[in-house]
Length: 204
Image (cartoon, rainbow, N blue to C red; front, side, top):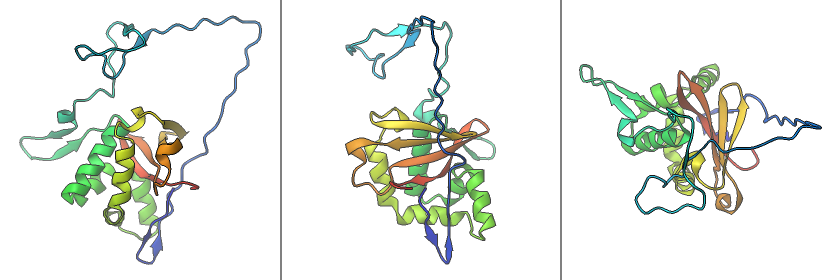
């Protein structure tokens, strides 16, 4: 990951573990592959056409990442406290964008930044809010990445890679990534929602 300089400190946010590759060899066994569920992104729109049929298997299946945009932020009517929902990398991107747009450092630190990153900040004597300041300073780099992968991990050319534990990287690859300072996001699952570990750049 990139290591932004904040004051006299240098934050180094590293992944928990390298991507491991598992190769399984099965000899003498015939394998049958069957699609039990396939639903193209535009499959529910009138007149949409796909080269593959829309297959609705697994009766009663509910996609846990299917959250309406208007439901990504829940507000307690009594306290007006906001709770952010991030079941996918794209949801996390929406929250990062909104926090930067609104200058909402408090929500960024409390609900977007991962516990792991905040603990690393504490170990280095850096306020977690400095991470928000760094993203504001590099807002053009953030927006360039978001514009290049508008659907998060569902964007063509984006690879989702496990990093060990509950961490994952979503990284833009190929021609679309050329010229970008940041090409991906490392994120951590905490209590059912994705949190930001940090941004990832070429060669890091």
